[in-house]
Length: 121
Image (cartoon, rainbow, N blue to C red):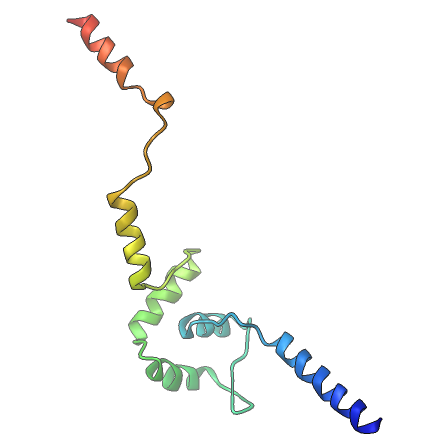
């Protein structure tokens, strides 16, 4: 019984740990942006990373230039919502621009403008 109880406790602890770890992940620039505002702390090997560590280690390792981060941070601070580029997103945008949704014919005013043109001639 003791062994079963211990394994149940370990299983419950594992389940609890999995619940606390979110499946959603932040991009490095968003993590740094939130860190700079004191909203999150970032750990590496169970130690808090300093702002200097994040700029000197994380950005280069993630291949994000300082200029790209500063532009990102500036736009986010202005309230813009930024979305990363992806080929799937570009394909979707191209498809939407090539095939725009057709307008409802009841809202079209073309017939009225043609009639007005004919009546003025």
